[in-house]
Length: 490
Ligand code: DMJ
Image (cartoon, rainbow, N blue to C red; front, top):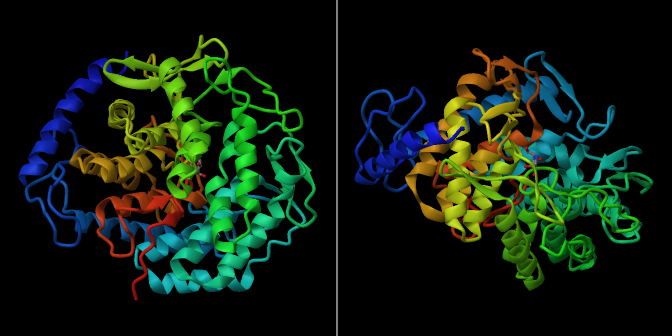
């Protein structure tokens, strides 16, 4: 079984690396991608490790490398796809994320706050100019409500918070108002999945949990910024409607009928998609808005998930799929998308579960330097070999490093970065992979717009010591948008 043989040596190695880092020494690591963490303060020039291959550069040097790689991807987007949603970095083409023929410059919107945090002010000015002069959301096409909220509304909000350009806030409000019919036309308050941005026509009546509950951060901030409580109220109503459907053992199913409020399936899939960020936003809503209902719901649902779904495999922790009413096992798959949950559990105070689950995914990263989309944790077999340039693992590295300051999270974040750079870098930027199990990897042709908001931001903030981010109070959304902790510097 995976984990039993692979996990023990790696944990021993990480412990040794962490001790070496704390002592300011350098270790030669066993594998080509294993790296030693350096202790000491972050920032340029801080805590450099010396020595041969296998050691990790200083945090300041790594931050500079990450910034360079972000620019490499950004330049590819600028060269081939400017104004379109996403770049195809291999063929030099572009595509639209929401609706064919209707670009919204999604990669630009996603990049705004990252450009600020990375100190790329000239690029930020160019990006902001495009958004504030070209973006028109009066589009007669159906937009995916969940994606539009976390990416467009969220990206514009964090763009506003980092630049204080009021036009960005106006655009965020405009986007949210165009999406509101998905909530207000629903008899239960659970949102429809699609909404026409020009007409407000809605469709798609059976969303999964993530699409019902991943909006309270964006809508809550908008309510605060505008003084209009309607956004927060809509988000909370959707949460409440879903949570009313918990079973007697406290678990939630995955899909719901927005018109009746009733489940349309019987399986609890936490923390995997398509429920993942539902739980992330219960915790985030509590942290950002101090809403005790959200904390109570987080505590109750997390307790049930840990009780009925968490399983130990060779010292690691995984989450099985179960019947939401009985707790009986229905599946043993683990999606890379769920790996964010280690960081979330850590932030919320359960470091034992957080470490166990993170270690499980790190064991996979040791085998595949770019994580596959899905594995069966009970056999260790890869069940989906592609990689969509996903950020969730390094989202957890970032969260757990902020929470614990344990250098092993820097070491593994660097391992993730090097794996991505070695394998997914192409002349036109960074691309998805069709198969991470082949050598060389079989690549696809797409830079996901979220790469500009998530992967490189989590990495940069893990190593940099930028005065533009308050590491103590900072909070990022599920799309990596900064919603708290912006520090304005000249
Ligand atoms: C992003 O849009 C967000 O992280 C979302 O929560 C899940 N999917 C992608 C990244 O994989």
